[in-house]
Length: 252
Image 1 (spheres, rainbow, N blue to C red):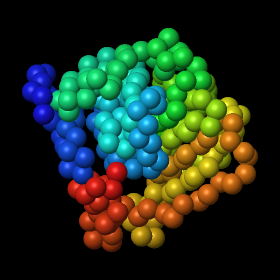
Image 2 (image 1 turned 90 degrees about the vertical axis):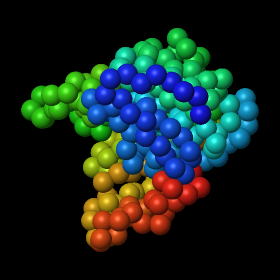
Image 3 (image 1 turned 180 degrees about the horizontal axis):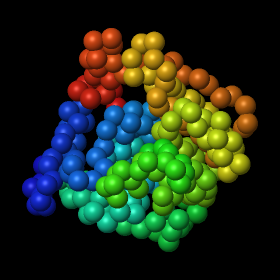
């Protein structure tokens, strides 16, 4: 691993399954299990000329978790300057600078950096909550932007995902199940045909709290598959074997 300079209140975390190291800070949004689950959900593609775009990339965690699974070149799009500053240092820490480009800009401007209809894979872990006037938001601006649709909404995510993808390219999204009807309708309106859906449950007997979706641009409107569910932890609160493999094994 390359040595990089950490700034105040930064630390290095590691995903043991990948041997990937990520620079994080308690002052800004840090990657969590949803990033690991989304990376695991992506289909492998080892072709060396493919283009992968990570929208709302944060500190670059999802893209870095995919470096073994996907060949080609990664474009990490992140609006928040502090996170976009951490991402290239994490890339350098893992000796992957030649394959990654970190872009500090609004997702709305992504075509300035990646032409339309050129991406093979687009991934996104977007803000989950609508920007309702009465909704309570974190006083930490970094966390508020990451969790609420303050700077980007679902329609923009799907519009740019579709615009970037080649015909039959694949888009991947992690989100909240309570917004699933809206998500599926918005994807369909933007030429994204949902093909695989996987619900994630925190414990046995509990309602799903995450949903993973794979869509194909201009795919046929039928053939959606509901994948076997993922239960994150047992009644004892310990991670189940599937999640343990993602975190500590070689499942991704």
